[in-house]
Length: 388
Image 1 (cartoon, rainbow, N blue to C red):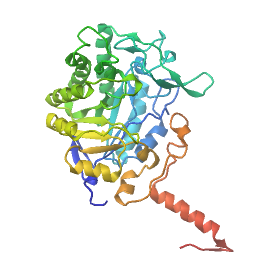
Image 2: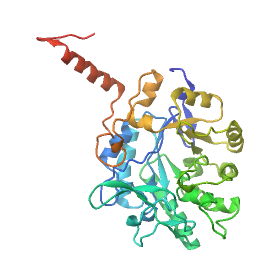
Image 3: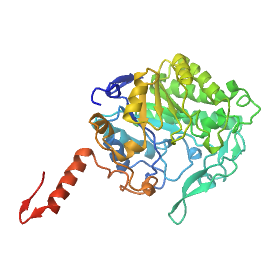
Image 4: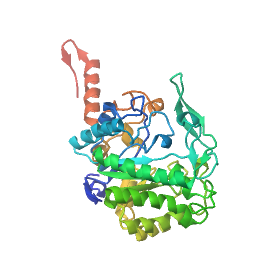
């Protein structure tokens, strides 16, 4: 695939991405405790993957209220910003680009993370979902989310300012851009969907009203750092966690026009990635391309070839890879040379833990060296190593 379009450089907002292969955001829960501070190990992990066109970090909470899983990083204290500074420096030294994904989980949380015992949401409706929580015994478990507290309008205004403050902190930490997490059943997505938003004020009801929160967040963040440094992740096709809404596609297409008017750098679509997932229609892709002049990124069940084919169609610009990149830190190199891919060896290492299952996946060159050494060792006769 050496000559594939997936290896072509492309300008994205305020920087040039060296290729069209993006490290997708993946929660890994490896921060230092207490206070959810990014670590040197996290810096190593991201720097290992700096050959991506650009990196999107794991979701990072904008406030203590925005937390929904154990050991996820924050972007609201000086210690957290300093920790992220080590990460961005490591990635930049390795020649990469890195974008901070900012989130507020809303109702996708647990009482143990909140002083008053309740997560918050547009409406007091519990999701049909669980979050990963480490108990007092030090063991991580999936636990049910409780019924959240409905946000007041004053609460909403405060959260919008939290987004702005976190974006400011991310730029201070050295990030090349900001991605607002607006999908996968988290707070912004909760405002967008009728199933989770039953409000009767200016933030609920019509599509325009349900878009108000995300637009106010985007406007504040863009005003703070510049719209050409801002992207948004959306997931209109995903209905897990109680996120059903027959108007989801219409809402996203209307939003895309508004994002275009603001001059956003990109829209990142999280697509359903299970084997029998619904296919995203060409009609939707064409409509989105017409509405939005910035870059379009998609993440789903893509291979190098299917991703390149979609880019070649002109309907998207980048393909984001998650688990493939997790197990193959040199993924672009492996794609370019049609090399075999590592598989995830132990799913129990996905959340929490140490270097195992995190920074110990090898580059192809290192992997081959180890395999050759093992072969030579097995075939040693006296002092002579036999290899082919």
